[in-house]
Amino acid sequence: MARKVVLASKNPYKVGEALAILGDIPGVEWLTFRNIALPEVEEIGETLEDNAILKATAAARETGLPALAEDTGLEVEVLGGVPGVRSARFAGEGKDYRANNEKLLKLLSGAMDRRARFRTVAVLALPDGRTWMAEGVLAGRIVDTPRGKYGFGYDPLFVPNGEVRTLAEMLPTEKNAISHRRRALEAMRPILLDLVRGALD
Ligand code: ITT
Image: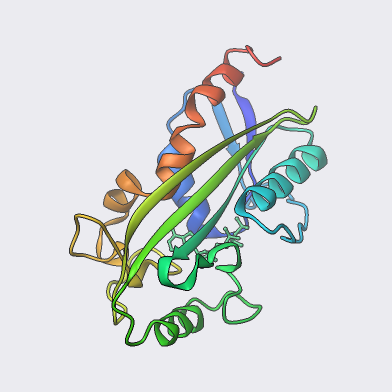
């Protein structure tokens, strides 16, 4: 019988990417916000690590099932790591991607140093309180004007190192092959395989 694992994110873009990355694990039945009620979690942590733990442990506790959550931030070098843990509400509450991008471009106008990185911290939590954590980083730079129609959030502004296209100009399969999210979630694969074969019971 397949093991149910909760994907504890309310962001449909993130859920789509996570399923494209980990959806192939045999023996795991993923439950998402579409078919299970997720707890309201205030993301009050000061770090991505804190918020990922808050989301995963709350979901595992409330559902009684293993839960995987992640928190992601865009860390801009010249801004000292901002927006970082505040990436979702950079321009205020409401997660308006366009307003966030405009605010970032304004802060960076005239800046020569455009280096930035996406950082994802993933946490798998079991209902008994055990947790596992992994990080994934994608380094790149911020362009002057948004480009591309794929992805979400800051993707139209971010060009990974070694690329000329923004993440939003890359096909979803191309983004998912190299992304911060892929790197963090892929590190969870061995633990999920252990879970499926009963090694964590
Ligand atoms: P959950 O907490 O429910 O998972 P969320 O959207 O609140 O969803 P985060 O707290 O991790 O997720 O917010 C991170 C924000 O950073 C998100 O709203 C986007 O603006 C941005 N972001 C995250 N991953 C991204 C990616 O792969 N590409 C571009 N922007 C991203």
